[in-house]
Image (cartoon, rainbow, N blue to C red):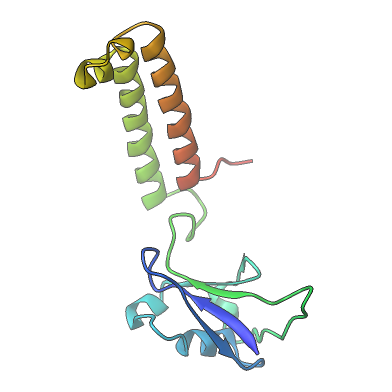
Length: 152
């Protein structure tokens, strides 16, 4: 038997079920409990973490793994990483808006705006504001790379 983990939405817990080896990925998706019909045309299937192109779903038949090398099949909802991979569309818009917000937030904190809002004297200027702005900038950059990974 093969274990399949299907997640209808990123905010909902995944459901795990077992299937017989030999089914195609298209049949596995069709048999997935709890996934709405409209989601089936947008979801992604991965075998051991590697996404399988939709055009192969009717031909790929996962085999049973071993105890030391199991076969893990996961069905995911659409992600910001998925899709074209060209960096366009939704990913590009979200990244630009987030980068502008990061620049504005870092400047606001560095100028002491956060300290004035919170009434914390150490953050109203000087070293405290600079340290808070730097940490905000670093954490924001980490957040941006989670939306769109850097090109290598």
